[in-house]
Amino acid sequence: MDDEIPTDIWIYYCAQQLKRHWRTVDPDQLEELAADLAREPHLRALSPQAAATLWLEPVMPPSRTA
Image (cartoon, rainbow, N blue to C red):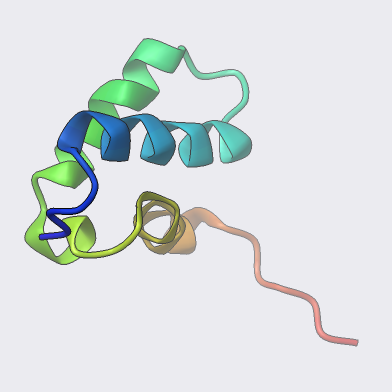
């Protein structure tokens, strides 16, 4: 776990990253999801933004390389 970032701050920034993808979802639900992600050791070891991005990978559209 990244002990340098307090859990409540980690959850806040993770929820903000999730909000960038799901703008219409209730912020309280995104915070609950971020709290769930914070309980996953492999995600909590990452930065909040990286954890959210990794978790979102299966639902993100494929990147376009032209």
